[in-house]
Length: 441
Ligand SMILES: C[S@@+](CC[C@H](N)C(=O)[O-])C[C@H]1O[C@@H](n2cnc3c(N)ncnc32)[C@H](O)[C@@H]1O
Image 1 (cartoon, helix red, strand yellow):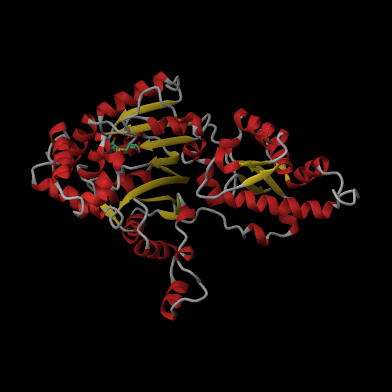
Image 2 (cartoon, protein in one colour; image 1 turned 135 degrees about the horizontal axis):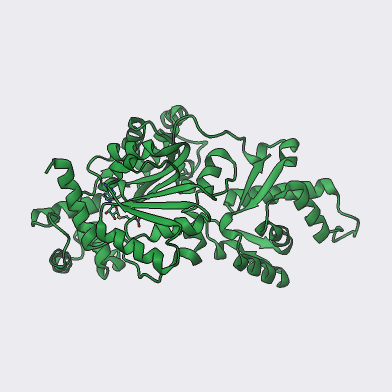
């Protein structure tokens, strides 16, 4: 057996013993718009191209699909797409098949027991690849990225992530510790999990490993899967953003953005970006986007995953910020509601909201990042038809005027140019928060 296949064997053993995620078969991501949104291919395409694609007939790969929960989310978030899941663990694939069968999705998802390094053998190219929580387990993540790049269509987008070495250093210390006691060799087993529990129970509360990995995470203490994922994960490797960028270059892939890009805002780490030490200010001005992300990580390693979208170099279209758009651009603006809001449930929420004559806390129904967004009745009324179809800016202005034909104080007819400005401000706010997508046609 070669060194590489031996390393696969260890990971395969771990996930054959404990397929991930260990969620009940009947559980579905279908009721969770935020979760589905993270699996919608429309969002990364919009982020890169500022265009709203139709997922119908797109080919989507879930590389390292585990027990199939996210493959199911991909199918639900991308209606009409063909979903393919691959994993090296035969038991995980078996569970994945049972899961999609249970939910009646077997016709739109197929699974293969295959190392992702051998994906080119499938002979299928993909519009979108989700490689979530997998790359850091590979014996050679660069070779894995290269295999994904080979099966990515020229305009395709790959979501890939690696564990952050800086954020996860406590876990790596604990894994090294338990290796010293013979763990992390063969399949993860109850004896290893019991040893972690007994060791933590025997330690003083102020011991760093116990304090950080155990006492501060009460949910880990009762969850075997989380103990395995943190203390006993086979082949778990950590990376910095600098190293991830180098791997992307090696695989001839180009960074598009971080998946949770709102939470990687370097400027927000400073009290006042206008008042920085001169060396930092000058350094920042010269930094590439990747270098800025690395600086963020060095200052504030808060993200367990370095989770990003990338694609073949030279794709994507630049667009000025909405605040700088010309009148012509606004006149050609086509407005879409976020795909996960185009549901009967949201229609009911809007209808109830507008009847209540108050404000609707949109973030409570569909949280995106940490933003809070309250809609008043008129905005809710304008959004309503977007559930069925996108509308041009002018159509939204007409609708606003129907809802608000006169100025509330003077009762004079509303001024159309004022309505246009109001609508611009509303749309900028909604797009920035992520609830609508705007295309210029
Ligand atoms: C932590 S689980 C993640 C599962 C799923 N992506 C999720 O996020 O729910 C990692 C999965 O990657 C699979 N895996 C590891 N190395 C692989 C490889 N070289 N090729 C395909 N799958 C692999 C494992 O068997 C396991 O099911």
